[in-house]
Amino acid sequence: MAKPGNFTSLPVIDISPLFGDDPDARARVVADLGRTAREIGFLYVTGHGMAPGLFDDLLATAKDFFARPLDEKMQVYIGKSSNHRGYVPTGEEVIYGGVPDQKEAYDLSIDLPADDPDYLAGNPMLGPNQWPALPGFREKVGAYYDGVMSVGRVLLRGFAEALGQDPSLFDSYVTKPPSQLRLVHYPYNEKAPGNALGISPHTDMEVFTLLRVTAPGLEVMNGAGEWIDVPPLDNAFVVNLGDMMEAWTNGEFIATSHRVRKVREERYSFPLFFSVDYHTEVAPLPMFVTGDKPARKPVVAGEHLFQVTAQGFVYLQKRIAEGRLVLPDNASNLHQFGQHARHEAEALAPAR
Ligand SMILES: O=C(O)CCC(=O)C(=O)O
Ligand SMILES: [Fe+2]
Image (cartoon, rainbow, N blue to C red; front, side, top):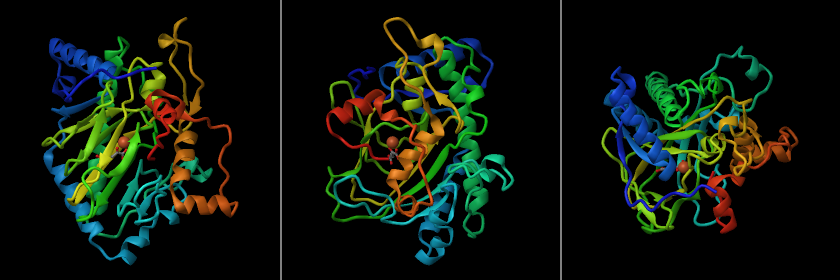
């Protein structure tokens, strides 16, 4: 099983050469990405080309939205959506042990038209977003979403090259991906003990995550089992590889465990979970399977994501209890992969 090295801090990788045409500079970045993906699974990304204003606007918009009265936010309650989009009030997410969080969120993903065939067929993760009526919200949050997805696509090509493959290796798997952006708000909590958990140890399930946060709290586990601080870095994304990347590469690239420590400070967190297409069967790609590294059991990406999601949200649990929602019983557990397996062996519950 893949295991990270004994790093004590994360590398900062300037990916601007991935947008340029200097082959030597590109090769250096690709080599850095490869080393990091094999040994750490976590990095800061700068030189991503996104104007700082996009994040500033996202943050200001999120602050405005979360400051609105509850009944206004509930106009776009996630429980009104058939494809998991909208406002997630405090208490909606099921807590895996420990002190309940005061966190609230707004979830969006690829904004498909109402005549999208997957949406019409009742797909539980594909369809339109539920946009709040707040002026400018859709434009600003949508612009950030498009920007971060573009960075994700460039990064995906960089990782493909870092595996010694054609940059387009993964492209055909990400044509209409349910890549979720979460706007998360942890209000000020004067009682929050510094070492209590905001999110318990987990790996992210998707290909990789592009994260921006406003305050410290995120920690990554190194190979020695020590928690390493990942404080926010100005105009940089924290990028971590997820289970699908580890599964595709048969463990060559690693999904690293992380957790969020509670801090006595209001905190906003904006993870973009870069996913593959809903119907993709995620299995090790043939070039990563060898005699001593047998292929693991495949999962259908979207079914797996939705199955895990369904366990974590009250409105989905209600739909299941009422028989209005039936989960596919063939979606196996992606937590069998990578560090999730190790954590489950250590009896630590996944957070999402
Ligand atoms: O808020 C953070 O710093 C990270 C959140 C996270 O790990 C997640 O949502 O999966
Ligand atoms: Fe995470």
